[in-house]
Every structure is written in C-alpha cells, then in structure tokens.
Amino acid sequence: MKWFLNRSTSAKLMSAFGLMAALMVVIGAVALDGMRTIGENTEEIYEKHLKGLHAVDEANIHLINGGRAGRMTVLAKTPEERAKYRALTDEEAQKFLDGLDKMDGYLVTEEAKRKLAEIKVAAPPWAEEMRAVARLAEAGRNNEAQDKLQATVAPGAYIVGKMNDLRDSKFRVSREAFDQATAAHRRARTTMLGVIAGGALLGLLMGYLIARLIARPLVRAVTVLESVAAADFSGRLDASSTDEVGRMAAALNAANEALGRAVGETVAVMEPTAAGDLTRRITTETRGAIRKMAEALNASLDQMA
Image (cartoon, rainbow, N blue to C red; front, side, top):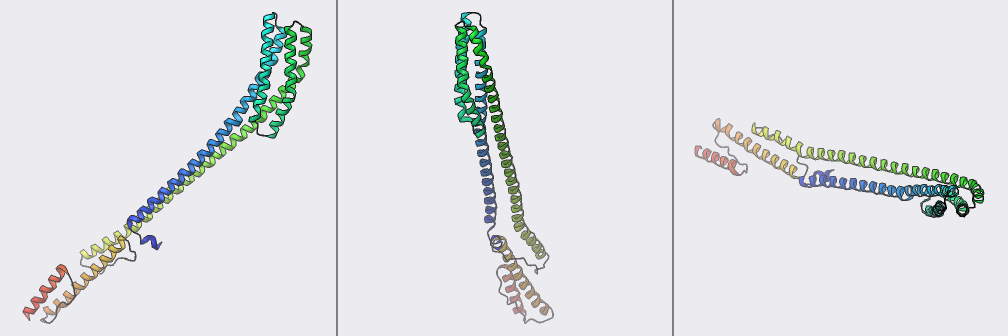
C-alpha cells in the first residue's frame, strides 16, 4: 500500500481510471462471450432442431397426401380425375421418400436415427404399393385397386405411427436444446450482472479511497493553517508520503518550524530589552521579510546600546 500512497495524485487517478477501463473490458468480454454462446445455441436450435421438425412435419404431410391421393384415384369418376390423382399419388409418394432422405442431416440422437431407419425400410414398399393402387384405378381395375389399397392400410398405419414417434422424439430433443440455451442465457446474464455489480462496487471503493487519500491531508492542512492564523505555530502534518500532498505537508511543517523559531527568538530578545538588557540579538538564519525584520531590530538595538 505504501507504494501507492507515494505515487503522484495524477498517477493515482490514472490507476483508478485504468482499473475502471479494465473492468469495462472484462464486462464487454463477458457480454460478448455470452452473446456468442447464445448465438451458437440459437443457430443450433434453428439449423438442427427447428429445421428438423419442419422436415419431419413436411414428410408427414406428403405421407398423408400420398395416401389420400391414392384413395381419391380409386373414388374418381372420370378418366381425367383418375389421371390427375394418379399423378398426384406418384408426386406425393416421391416427395415423402425424398423428405426421409432430407431428414438424415437433422437427427442428432441415436434413437431418432434408429426410428428413421425403420421408416426407411417400410416406406419404399408402401410408396410402390400406393403407386400400384393409383395405376390400377387409372386403368379402371377398381376391384384390384381396392384390394391393394386395403393391403396398404396396415403398412401405412405403421409408418404414420413411426413418423409420430419420430416427431415426438425430435420435439423432445428440441425442447432439451431450448432449455439448455435458456440456461446458458441465464448463466451469462447472471455472470454479467455480477461483473457489473462487482465493477461498480470496486469503482466506488477506489473513488472513496482516493478521495480520502487526497481530502484528509487537505483537511488537516486547513486545520494547521487556521492555527497559524491564530499565531500558533506548533501544528504539524504527516509528511510520510512522497506525493504532492506529502511534499505540501513537509513544506508547511518547515514553514511552521521556521516561523516558530523566528517568533520565539524575537520574543526572547524583546523581553530582556524591555527590562533594559540591550545585549541580546537575533541570530537565527531567516529569509525574506522575517530576515529584514530581524536585521532592523538588531540595528535598532545596536544604536540604542
């Protein structure tokens, strides 16, 4: 602590400002790190989970639309309608298969990957059966189409159930990722608030200490100067530090001591003189106005003697 007390006032202030700047850098670094973590978590939630959920839902829609289009082909009354629904069945079935392939990049757990693998085994035969239903219906072979359509019910229900399981698994993983991101955000916020509060308290403490280091010696100096104004030269200040305040205290102490000696010796000469002893002289080395006063008094005593 002594080394800090001996530093100049400007150095003390610069040290305090430097500390505050360092705290601001720390706060900024903590905030940036928290923002980076939140950004990474948000990107992961979007890229791997929200897009994954969308891919599952999209494939599920094509699965449902493909089954509906196959049934509509059977129920269609005109060749034009049967041709339209047959083409729609082919399109939706292919989109469903393509959607399953697209989901590969969005699944992160082994459970979800296993469920997708099971769906991929059952999906191509079901899609081919639905295409066959639509082709038979388009050809007017409704009885055969209905029989084959009935045969697709169980595989279709199995795939729908697996797709729902896959979506539930994906949603659960997404929820866990969201909870982790929320927890990371709360940790970053708590850490940043703690650093800000600690920085504010440390800044206040530094300001208080520096204010005391500067203000207390000045208050004491005012007290000593008020004593000098009342002709009391006995007051002294603590001049142990080497900063501006310490040097001021040393100078004031030296001035008080010099004034006290000069006034004391003058009194020691004047009291005998008043009693008729003209042999006393002021011998203390002084400067300025006090020296002139001492020389004038000595000269007057010489003339009187």
